[in-house]
Image (tube, rainbow, N blue to C red; front, side, top):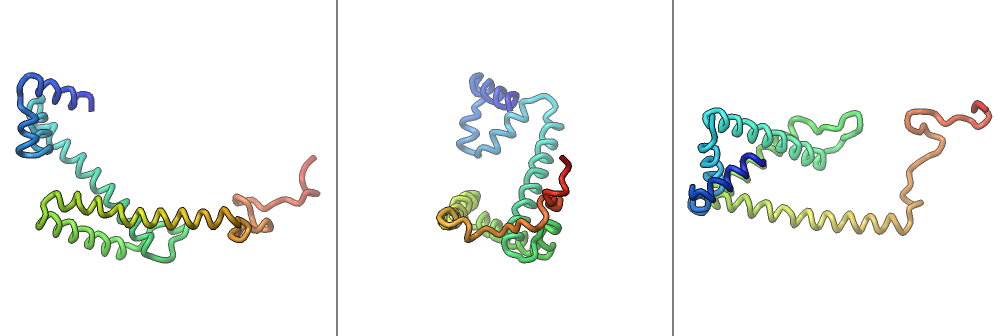
Length: 164
């Protein structure tokens, strides 16, 4: 971060015109202009693209697992992942929505979807807050812990069996 941002600031101060590139062609063009100014740009740019790809795939997989987990049953601590079919359906759905939005509204369509995605999250958060308030008012009603069951994988000892 320091090297790239310092290089960009230096380039702008020495008249490279990164601000003009950013205003006319976008932030990604300014980024590649900075990379072109670095030594070994032919190596740095492919490494950067690879890192971006890996980051995107990792984030997409995490999001698909979360959406699949929310929309499926049978998720347990021993089997925390949704089925592959559910993840594939969510992946195709997200891909189609993103492709349609980019096709008709360019990158601004994706930005709009990102902002709109917060609206359901707002309602979900309000619902969770309401549920939390309900639990706070009467926590015993929602307590499912049975003291006779195992605790942390160990059976509770009888006080007479404990070593003195």
